[in-house]
Image (spheres, helix red, strand yellow):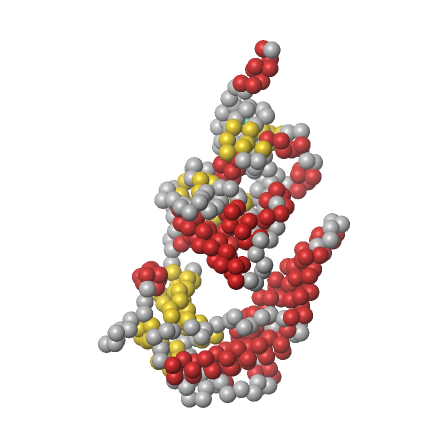
Length: 403
Ligand SMILES: [Zn+2]
């Protein structure tokens, strides 16, 4: 897998930075021209033919123009793929009699404005870049950039940091870099062997307990008393794109990173989690979360699991929050917000913990046809072969009988 880390360009002198900035500005212009050209093409190959590249009038080198074409092609293909998925979802929702106006708006907007390239970094491969680590200077390394055009040759010093060293000791540095006006991004090829020993756990995500695992780990508030819900609440009050919005967003990112880092995976080789494509209804419909889904949390979680060699299984979570993890009885009324209470065996448990235990089990998948029957309204047993079921006596029911 590829992991990246950034290093600051602040140790460069002003003249060098000026040349670099003019190159990056011109490079972005070229990428944006390619994006315009390619946007209406039906088929786009990763390598852009001469009929396109020859149309570019720019002072950056022919090689850099090819590089920009390749990057533009990737951006356009990526955006088109996303648009196709949106269109598919729109049609699906319409066929179900729904009106996906928000999604339609996003789709139309992207279709007319085309991909935005202002925030991209220039992706430069080994033909432009030389990275030197051993040297006699006070810096940890130098990046030499050449073949950019206008006879620009730049030597940029950088300093290593903790994350850089960690990646360097665990993997092999790639010969290319990404570069912006202020940062160089280095990439590393890291090989992780999948774990063969350990248990399979289920992980459930939620607003109050951000992460609950079937082996009893519950991660809620950080040391400042923030939880996922309080941060999302704050975020929902900020205007998108405002300074306050960015501040709370980065707070949320930090919180997510902190949360995932709390998770102990020492004796775990496999994690079952819900598939984000079909997040449970209650989660999706909550007003707070309509804009703030769990995408970022799952991304950070998956990355950590991958780093540790832990396998991830994405499961359809239907009924995992309504099933009693003790006796297997599924009924809609079983879950009462934060408390799960089984109306068959009276088992009580924190809702998220109960769901995470269900996710950890090898339950027989429930098909679409069966779900249509909505048996969860009246209740049904949902079990698996390797779970020994404990059906405790239900104290309230016994009481009722004696009355
Ligand atoms: Zn039960």
